[in-house]
Length: 148
Image 1 (spheres, rainbow, N blue to C red):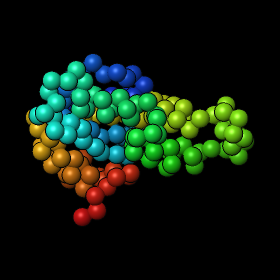
Image 2 (cartoon, one colour):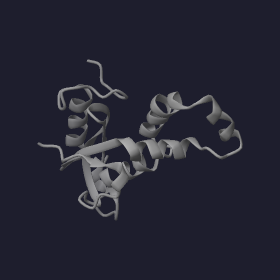
Image 3 (cartoon, helix red, strand yellow):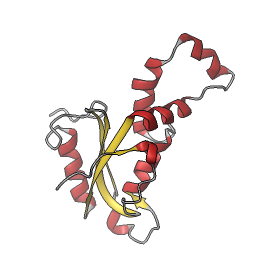
């Protein structure tokens, strides 16, 4: 089982990801593993859909929208907010700056992802656990490690 080459979020969408597929993915900031996840829960019951699984999850991450996307929340809280300047803060109150917009820009400017397509949600869960505990990629992800 081998990960795809890394792709930049700035060139999303990625036409090589199937429209319906289960899989795991890793998100990187240069050589630092930030996050590992899986998508395609109950893929076996959702094969009839036009889009489901890995492609929809990575698309969600690419948008930078914090609502409903834990990865984007991690990026905002741990990477974007600490980089804000005092002069940025008033721009939030008048609507000139939005955290979703800054998060999307950060993701697209700096982050890469890679993935593995699998045949079942059971396989995806198993590989995600191995990725999050450091077994699969040689390091644990910064945002969501499993501490064993």
